[in-house]
Length: 295
Image 1 (cartoon, rainbow, N blue to C red):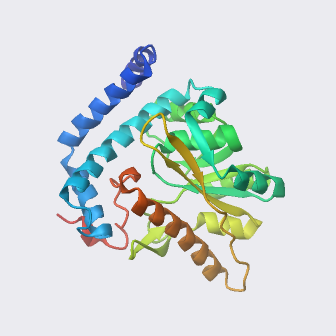
Image 2: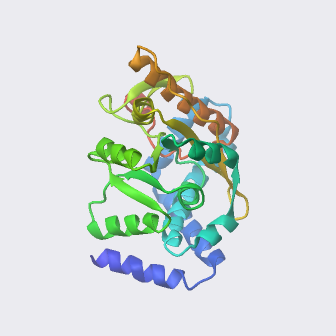
């Protein structure tokens, strides 16, 4: 409780300051975290070498490593700011590319399943989709601290995003679909063998959630990949990709696998184009290739 109220006091002070000052403060925290967190610096390099080999070079790898920390801390700042941003302020800070895709999907009346990733300013991206395009329901992992848990829910619900706890997620997502509410799922994190299926990611096997494809196939939904581009507050773009249709053949397992692989392919293509923007800190290949993360 004490930590939470200290955080809220810090939030109060920061929100009195100009945005440039808040941003500079969180970038400073990111710099400190980068210096002292050897564990995740190592994970970043392990991921980069496993996915891309040595093609980037040491200088670019270091730049990506530093930016991972900066992007994480700025995403934390975004959670704080989302509590205060109006719909108009969000609209002024982002551009939406290919909005006709979501407009047509909404007009069709079919369930919409947005899939995204920890890429760019993902917190602003989620807020933009939920406030400017259509309200969403998303899955989150519950905090052990109930105060911070409630804080996160309040921040995201401020922008028309309902949060469903990871435990019992399928039931919550099914309810959202039946209530004609779009859902949004992050697809770029490792899963256990029980919770995911094996796909190809950067030419390596990796585990990924099959939930988007499973739900889209069951309810005749459209999977729409959405990613956030931009490194500063001046050039954010919500990139909406072409919908993924899930086949309805006699082989449900294959239909789901193919649709899940398509999601991974879109993310991989975007990461190769903008490697700096992805969150390389996560042990993405841990289930399929645990040897990558051995010291």
